[in-house]
Image 1 (cartoon, rainbow, N blue to C red):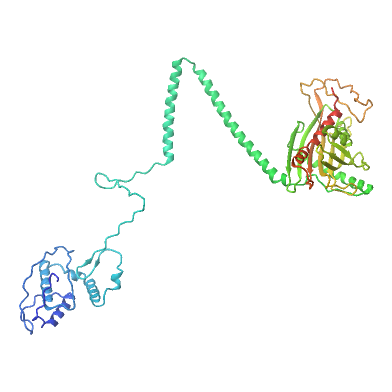
Image 2 (tube, rainbow, N blue to C red):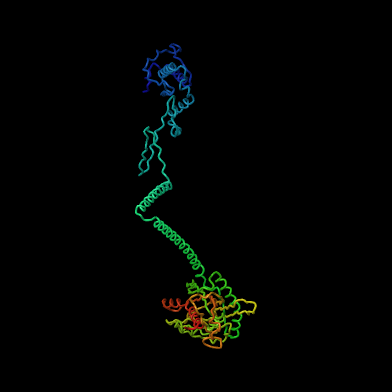
Length: 538
């Protein structure tokens, strides 16, 4: 039972219509005074007895609870009128709260009535999130308490540090790492200065002169500088070698053909064979001259050097490349060295058998040979019984310009080109019994004059096996013993590419490896044979 409700009297149902009418007037916001007794024509009743007055708030925010029902009785209406008059007497200059929220109270009353008749409304089921909601006259619905914030599992709660006044203290920002390191560096530098001062004091106390320590510090500084320079130099050298390795792996090792290689086919007819070699001579010699000139453009011209490499191609062929520079000091002319090389080619099988220990046999009759070209077919038997066959074509050219008494001509030079025959109808290859070896070479002789080294007091004595009246040794030059500061040097610059073809024969791997390792020995045998021919033995 409500605070202001009382039981309905059985005799108070006469003015139910008037009570309902008064209730509507109360909702419409019309202020009414106490009804005097006997004002209406109906049966009069005595005023309701007084009831205990509850404590009401005196400010504007006071809340008045009131439940309105369509079936209120006359006593309830009278009590409401008395309560309204009492509120007006307390605050005569202020409008009642129901007038301030007229529209809101009317709307809330309608919702209350609808809820009593039909149940809850959709608006109440999903109230908007916000502050308090007003329901009825002066009644406000309290906002539900916020749900506690979910704490992450396994993460401890942060302790809020508060100051003396109770306010949370602001967390100090963390110093960046570079600031910490800079401060530490400055502190260490100050400490280093203090330590140096202590060292100076100890030196003076020991009696050792300062110059000794100064020289020692300078020496240590130079050593450190040298170590740093050496480390940087090694880095640069490694970068260059890596670049060279990349070039070798990506280009040279994947190139199965020689830059001076030409396809050569010789028939069984001797005239056609000779005509094919004559027509190929100028092409090969020009090709060799251009290649050697361009390849050695940035390399030393007189000093000896050598570049060598061996690799296996994707087709299974094993190749050996070699380019070197060989000077012949104290020789008489370019012709002398050039003819020594021709002598080696004409007796190649003898020189190879003598120096390498392999048995080399020539199968052709050299019917197409001349002073400018030749064709040799050689079969060598290695120490392990492996047979290797070679079919080589060689072209020669010696240039000695005429020199007048008053004008100097161009320097003499000589060219040698070597290539392998690809198809020979007269002497075909036998891959079932022999391993095919191709040799491509480019050689150029140039003449230079350089100062004789001081440790060589006498001129180099030479002999010539091919021309001269005195035979062996070659007669001495009358001016040979003359003291000359400069000497003639003939330089042989050559490029070799030897290719050992892939074979299907059953050869042990270690034997095949030894054959491959001996590919470059052919070029060494050539130089040794030329030295024996040119220089006298002491």
